[in-house]
Length: 395
Ligand code: PLP
Image (cartoon, rainbow, N blue to C red):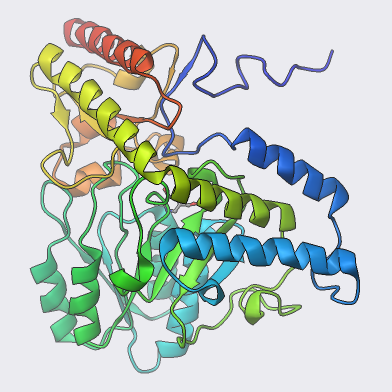
């Protein structure tokens, strides 16, 4: 018998009564209206947008143009500054390789914060294997980048690119991107900021921030998986990663994912319109969760809580647990850090970089809430976390 699509195992959504979804930083459910509109596009508006001689092709092109405008409006930039990709990973790879290919001869050096997502860390590592110099800039115990160390490093040698994520996916800590830009530009370096987690959770104004490059992903903000984009400030040159038919201004060849791009545009538009409401909702729920944990679990650590954070993310540790906290949270879908670290059963490199000991880091739990999370769910999450921790303290 075919398996029902809404069977509990498959439905990782907070509206299901049996499961509470608290892993929104890993991915969000695709907004139903967006998914339905995407289905129509897949089935009815399927013409190739490169076919400009047919009305159907021009209609498909129009959907992409609208999406580019929606994204640009949501994040404060011009539409022609965005290139659609298959996600943030492809976007960041394109930026890092594309910049280094052009600047390797004159400025063979990249600086990056030590808490970057693997989608940034790995392409930088690859550039290092190919002869570039890479230098990781540390942060403090709250995960805030050490700007003095960045400035010092920039003064030592010509640097092509500085990579600093705007919001960390594990702790939610926000970096002072305009200041990173000011320091880096003064030294002649370009700045790339991974803003994947920020869209829809905090306001973004790319032109105001001054960054040269940024990346985004639709599935982190209620859009579909497999579509993202990068921002490239007007006038900057970049070598493409994918060469072929010359789509996306020659910077990302391949027939466009029209339905996905349209869905991303709709998600960005939703983020603009619902932004303030989402942020205050998430702020309230985060405060509720953390207050409950603090009052019921003496010694609990909420990482980066003394720094500015995006709302909705609580990375929690309790020193002394004998076992994985996450394994004691039946009925709750959360994680112990980034999806990549969880996959490999490793402690979060972000927490390790922040000076957390390996055992505590390994037993940490990240709760990330979303726009459909309710107060009742937060109460249940807090109660489960307290009960699970007590068990692990006594075992
Ligand atoms: N950057 C950050 C901060 C992320 O959280 C993620 C996803 O987990 C990515 C990049 C990669 O995004 P994508 O899944 O669209 O490739």
